[in-house]
Image (cartoon, rainbow, N blue to C red; front, side, top):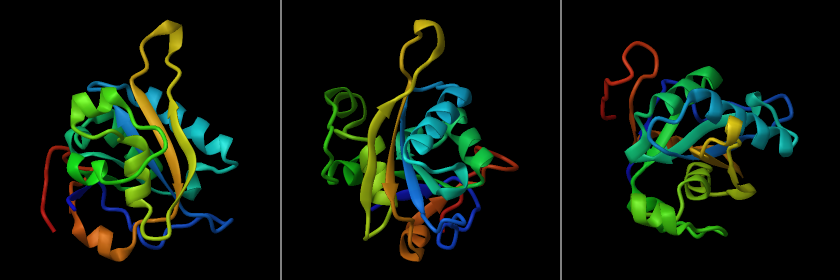
Length: 174
């Protein structure tokens, strides 16, 4: 499994006061605005009765790991952005596969598969793939899914890390 962590946050110990730890998988088109992603993330969390403090990580496909909109939201939430290659995501069983995603990225799921993969061994999908609601009839450019669980230390160690602060284009392998 290949993963990329786009933040320097601690992924193993973060939890809200309620003690629920969740990961959010995000599928996105190139150039997705950060506001569209952040609104979607907040909507998905609110629908599950959760807040931004419950999020331990965002997760996506490697092909979108450097998207400024995703990086900005991960930084805003102060969580890592984990990215998995399409092959790893394609192995995850999901309730709502997408032909569009399969054709465009080589995996039938990004949001649901990434959320589940990042959530670790005791994972459970809480909220299935949800589409963003862009203003004024603009096309949907993001999807998100919510999974109960948090990346464990092994998954964090397997991830390649890119810092979101100083230089969003710097990549180091750990």
